[in-house]
Amino acid sequence: MSEPTRRPARSGLSRVTVVADDGVPLAATIEGPRDAALTVVLVHGHCQDADSWDDVCIHMASEVRLVRYDQRGHGRSGSGEVSSLTLDGLAHDLDAVLRTLVPTGPVVLAGYSMGGMVAMAYARLYPAAIGARIVGMALIATAASGLAEQGVGRYLRHPAASMLHGAVARAPRAMEVSKRAGGRLCSLLSRGRDGDSWLRTAGLVLSSTTSVVAWSRLLAAFAVLDESAALAALASVPVVVAAGTADRYVPIAHSEAIVDLLPHAEFVRIVGAGHRILAECPDQVASALGRLLGTLRPVGGPLQRSAV
Image (cartoon, rainbow, N blue to C red):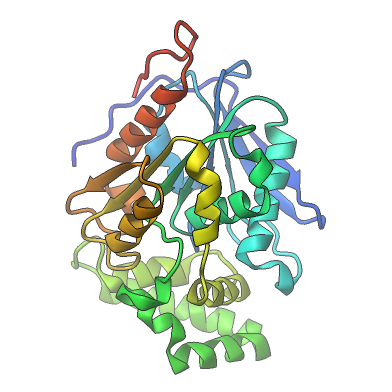
C-alpha cells in the first residue's frame, strides 16, 4: 500500500473528557470545524483506542468534524464497575459522548469491529435517534451475531475461555501481569511473520493498555453476541458495510450476513485485507466513508463534494 497523502492540518483539534452517566471519565478528541454540517463519530475496536483511527482520519475530508473517544476500560478512559463492561454499557457511553460533544446536528456513526457492535447496540437501545440524530452508519469488519461460530471466534466458547474468565475474576492483578507477559512473548515470536498473523494480533491485543478485566468481560460478551434485531432500526438510514476478504478474526461472512438484513447498504469488499483493516487499508476505508457522507450532503450545501 502506498504512503497516505497527507492533508492540511485540521482546525480546532482538542482533547476533552466526557463524564459517563456513572461518573467514569472517557477521553475524547475532537477535530474539524465547529460549524461543520456533519459530524462523524468513530468508535474503536476491542483492545484498541481512539488512535486506531489515525490513518483513516488522514484521508477524511477536512470540512467534516470528527469525534473519537477511548471506550471504558481502554486507552486513557476509566473502567468503572465490572458490571458496566458490556456492549450495552459501552452503548450508553456512546450516548453520553453524543449528548456531550454533539448535542445538535446530524451524526454518522462509524464502528470498527467491537465498535460496530457498540453502534448496533446503540441503535437497539436508542431507536428514536436513528434517522433523527443518526443519519448514517458505517459497520467495518464487524458482526451482528454468530461471532462464536466462525473463524477464531469459535474459541470464544471453548472450555479454556471459561477457565480464563474465571481466573481473571479471581485474581485480576496476577492475570494482568500474565496478559502483558503473553503479549511480549507473542510479539517476539511474530517477528518476520505477515501483518495479520494470529501471533502478531495476539501480541498487539495482550500488550495493549486495555485492562485484563475489560478484555475478559468483553470477550465473554462476544460469545453471546446477537444484535440482529438492531439492524431493523438501520433500515431508515444509509449504511456502508466494509470488510477484508482475508479477515480470520471476524470473517467477511459476518458482513455478508449484515448486508442480507440491510439490502440497501453499500457493501465494500477490500480484497486481501485482514482484520486490521484500519491500518492496512485506511484509504479504502476512508473512501467508503466518503461515499456514505456524499449521499448525505445537501445539494448546494457546504459538503456537496467529497474530498476523500
